[in-house]
Length: 105
Length: 314
Image (cartoon, rainbow over all chains, first blue to last red; front, side, top):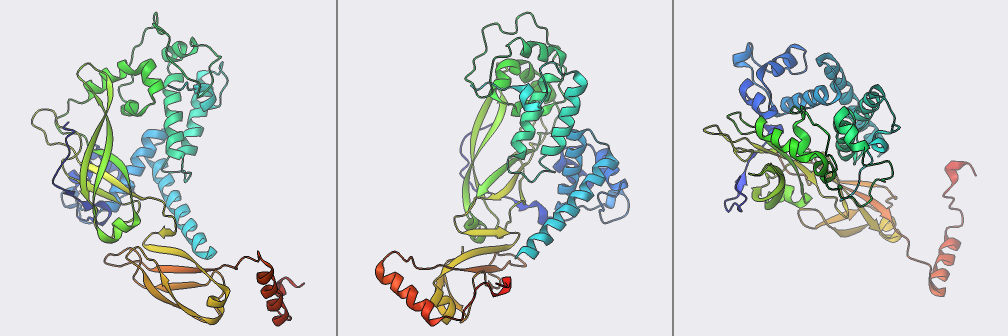
């Protein structure tokens, strides 16, 4: 890889505000084969818009959920259903923490 | 280089069984997983535990590590003895642990080269891999959308199979209105492809550098504003800093400490901009001279019936 300084400023999009990623694009973003994403959709972890794999469209938020679910599976040796449950509970904790924070003020 | 006591990191005895080690690892991994834990050092601890497990779960590596002796302490200056692992055979079958490149210098000085060879093998897919990095930016950058020079370190394997840290600098335009935890995707700035494939993308996760006086929550920005007792009591128009420049703020008369004033839309900009909150903090002038004490005594005289502890029933 080139380590030389880039002169032209690079600009990119904010992932979380991006919408309408295809199955191929979300697979690339998470660096996994499509079956890993398809099983996340089947488990209900990801809910893309559109019917049928070809017309599925994902958001940046889906990319984040998918990467967390995949990391939990790989790092903690838990299966898909376990990762889905952990993700759901983590989101609940997050929400409760936010409410608690709001109450403190 | 500092010695790492893998047994201590895992919280197990030196004669722990493989089952005990696995159990300890699972517990610690769940505790410190960066997606689970909110502790600021979670990621570091998680990596440390992962590295310890990488060695202790493997009978060969564990045996080699054990013969360094039990007298080393974490943090002690360490240099591997010459031929320290002579006579040990490594199958090095852990090609799936792609994070080997993130392990400590201590680890790579002991087991590094075998891993480096594996990393080379794993990379023969056509497309370059996506890379992830976290960058710290100033809150002000999210207000203006500045172009910043970002220095990234990436572990790479050089021609001789050694692991090296390569530094590269990128000029990146920060999108205006970005928030902590969001990711910027830079197409084609990830790992190089092998052959004709496309290079991977680089994902930059944004974190705000802690600011000496602003706090950020999602889109909203908070400032603790010190005010004098008379400014709070009588009301005042004060100059208040915001990340977008200072503004004049009217403090209503009879304000209390911890009183919250909202400047709508002056949080992090965007389609739905956040708000800027000013929290009043009443600061007392020091009573460090005869005159100052006389003023306070006079003050007390004037407010004889005031009981700040009325709510406590005393």
